[in-house]
Amino acid sequence: MRRSGFHSSVARRGDAIATSAMVVAAIAIPLRARAQGVDAARAIDAYVAPYVATHNFSGQLLVMRGSVVVYDGQIGESDREMARPNTRETRFHVASVSMQFTAAAVMRLVDRGALTLDTHVSEIVPPVRGGDRITIRNLLEMRSGLSDINSRANYAEILKRHQTPASLVSVISDDTLSFEPGSRYAHEDHSAYNLLALIIEKKTALSFAQAMQRVLFLPAGMSHSGVDDDTPIVGPMAKGYSPEGVYGLSLAEPIHWSAKSGNASAYTTASDEASWIRALVHGTLLSPSARAIMLDTAGPSVGYGWFRRLNKRFGEFVYSMNGRSPGFASAVLYLPREDLTVVAFSNIYSSATSDIAYDVAAIALGLPYTPLAIGTPPLPPDSLALAGAAFTFPKDFYQPNAVLRFEATGGELFLRWPSGDATPIIPLDANHLIDRAYWEPIAVVRDSTGSATEMTYDRFRGDRVTAAAADSIRR
Image 1 (cartoon, helix red, strand yellow):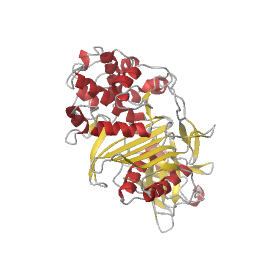
Image 2 (tube, rainbow, N blue to C red):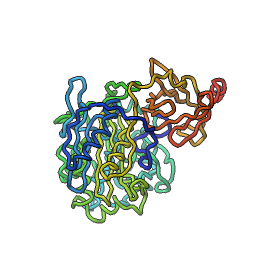
Image 3 (cartoon, helix red, strand yellow):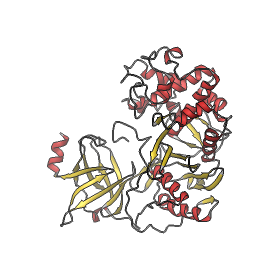
Image 4 (spheres, rainbow, N blue to C red):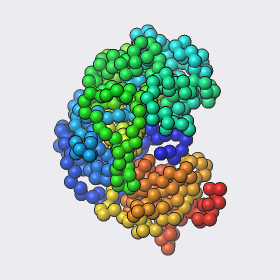
């Protein structure tokens, strides 16, 4: 599902959560957790329970401060049909968090002298157009100018067939560069990490999956991690689920994970992810110079598998990454001043993991946070007087000049986008809602008669328009 020209696998999060403050439903959810600090564990249990109850989180949630485990929760089921619970050993596809591992493997090859950050792609993979101007550094920082494979009209078909890094690169290798390499940042540069996977293969003479085991996962002590190249995976693996309507779930559409080589094909556990972060920050996995490049706050704010940004909420630079791929969602945070790591892996395709990670970090640090506030029973759509209401948004909205229309179907509320997508809407109260697909807050302003006159979606304001005007704008 798309609402704009980019797939929301990496997204802005963390300064404030704009949900309403109703009484959180008291729902008893069994969470298996071991924690140091009973109060923090109980607070995290209570915080995450509404997400679990509404089928917006299921997986692993780990919080570490230094080497001390603050919270280690295995939540929900890895296989709902078989009632199989998630455990510490359950592997999760981690979507764009995979880029961290690909980037680290490249940096280890740099440490070995197999290549440099200024090596040009054409020196390793000659057929790529513009490869004589694209460097390894450009690829790692998502500044390559390559066309993005995920944006191709036939991308759904690409996901239905087994792929290799070489076959993925061949799809875009003849395309004209969209900008001069290094001149700007592309919000999504999946093709760059497909190409890095191929470069790793060329430099190791191994398949990408084999190379990642030898170059990164084994040296980092990540015994439950790997790259899914469509071969059978040994050990427990979570099934992926997709939101169905406002509160339901269905099995995610199966894909060939080999079609996401380098950018979203890795699987791991929360404990392995935490081990990787400790190895990156405190260990000898990388040379000091390579580690400095990956963690440099003075350089580009995006690259090497991380967002590196000053965060007002925590008053320090925060390293973060999140991702979504069919059936899965992930979010990872590292706060260097506190030496705090938060890992949230879910086998439900939902952007809620990002909010969860930031709020759980706040709980662990004793900072303010806003709990998810869903009343019970949920408000029926006809009590909101929003069905049929349409709102027009400005040109800088996710879909420029979009008209969004509320629709009630089967006793649930949806938001219809110009693209044709209908995203399910969770009511918090009469004037505050959440778009379940993108986990964005919605607020409605009403006049003295109770009629909705405007709405905000995330940070954007939309004005009410008549049905006729909405149809005219669409044409």
